[in-house]
Length: 211
Image (cartoon, rainbow, N blue to C red):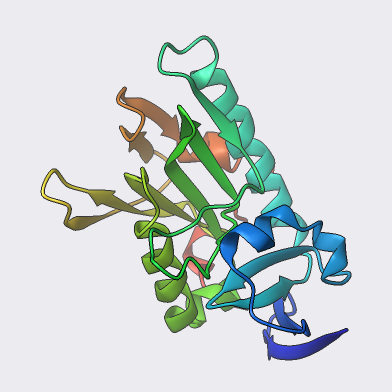
């Protein structure tokens, strides 16, 4: 059974906490069929609690389709053993290992996630605390070198990159001519934002973040 924990105002995203008998470890969570947790669209493990998310807006799925298509084209035949994934788990390097995040998409190379992608809805833009916590969890995942947060309602991406000294830097790109440059796989990859949004082009780029 699920109990509402956070209902978004725009109706795009709802979060629930699944009632489970005891806190789970990341390994236990990833080994469990998600249907055992309930009927939510997707689940994550956050500090031992199983969090269920309802299905996002159609635009989210269209942007994800454009992203996976773009990644597939660029990663086909690469020599670094890298490939795109959607719906895979990412576990922070912590002693307690009680968190497992599920990015919208990622690039994995030699069994380690290297680049993760999140499609950010208007409600998630407002929930900056939740967004920041998820980003920190993903930054703590072994191998992750870049995090790309793709805005759902405008041609804009926020990119976080791990520098050589381990510190994270922030970069922002936007507009119809913007190109997302990624180097987390060891090779430069460039994707126009219009290609990512090909199936869900924002009707009004100036209306980002509005319900």
